[in-house]
Amino acid sequence: MFLKELKLFDYTLSVCMWTPPKESLISDEIVFGIQVNNDKINLGCIGLGRLVRIEARLRYHLPRLARMFNPMPVYWSCDSRDCDHVRAVSAHRSPTGWHFIKNMDNTYADAEGPTYISIISKNEHRKFESSWRDYNAEAFEDGHSHSPRY
Image (tube, rainbow, N blue to C red):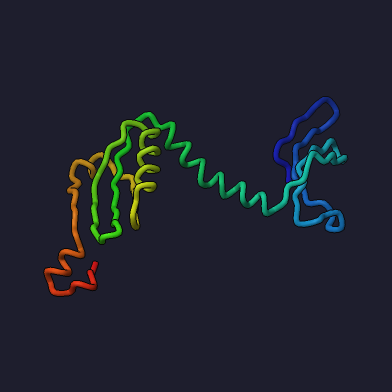
């Protein structure tokens, strides 16, 4: 598979990736190299397992980087429940994407139970009504002191 091709005088220089013959492999690997006309020059091998891990890291970090460099305000909501079965739903505004990433990381680090963060629009942020609900207290008042219901 050709990744990039460059014409240089009478030669075609291609940066490519291919799978070498099975007998030369210790495990499944892909070779990255340069191909000049029909001669292949290996630059290195990378295992498929490592390639999958690199892809997973990129899928996680690229959207974070894109959000991080956003200079506009970010509006977001947080829905969390703590260890005492108290549920809080609130809306927040971060001045920039960098602040949003920091706030999101801090929110998840301080969470005592299931916590969900979602990005909302400015209009939704204006209309948002925060709520706080203690499920244990409600269950006790209803006579079910051992089983709070959600």
